[in-house]
Length: 373
Image (cartoon, rainbow, N blue to C red; front, side, top):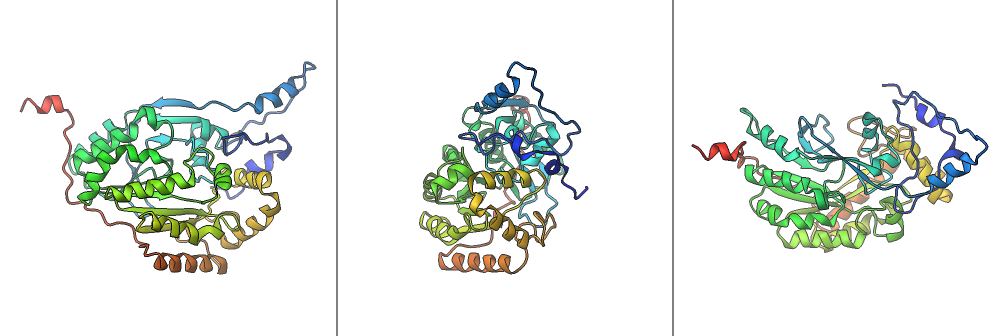
């Protein structure tokens, strides 16, 4: 792929609408495959002023139902500690401005900006497709993660319950899995997760990016509040679920000073493991994040981006395996040392929880038909 960033060059910053309450961005940033350019036109009836007013109205979230052909995604990255992943949703209403999954909306011909937060694709037949995959002859269980790209417990899950249906299949098949979330909604499914955890089949990781409510409301506007996430860690731990904390992404001079405090708070609530990833800015995330910085933290924007580039070999982003999660250079090494020392101090294991893959049993595809035999 080309290393150029035409998306950034084609956008006039003055045309970006102001921030919307409860949204990570108000910008309908064109995606990288877009070949059309729109130009504002005043027809004499106040059209431009009307457009500005409409832009400021908070858009409603629209859930689009989709029947998928497959639900298991293979992982070919050596930086990630699992082989398979399940993402019941595309897009995420949490609206985290830094989300590295935002560019995936480009493949849907939707904006990685505001569309990513307001146009949520729900894979309504996820459980059915998972059951079929597990029942195929020759299927070999591998390390599986739930919600690696977008949060499996985002608001739409409250009513759709797709994630729960997926975990029901995992439970029936005795297939080990881990999950990562920012949502307290995971507590709803403890009746399924806790028994599996007791048998070495489940582990959870809660993402705590900051303890500062004000920063969290800007950075992750529709995710659970920091204190609520800590309470979720405590609830999971008391239920016997191995629970870890993800301090990700680490953003220099923004949430980075809190690194040790977050780890200490999570350990105090029962977390036994931790991992951390430095800020990544792939594709359209780069202009979105920089615009967000200019809007909310203009006095720190230049300093933050300078440090990011120092970790990324002088670039805004580094997509290379081996360094994309950790960064490189002196500052990245110092951050690495701080994280390791804090984990040792608070008895947090840096290795992911080992799960048991030997208990897998293929589920029944058609329970009605099976009952005849």
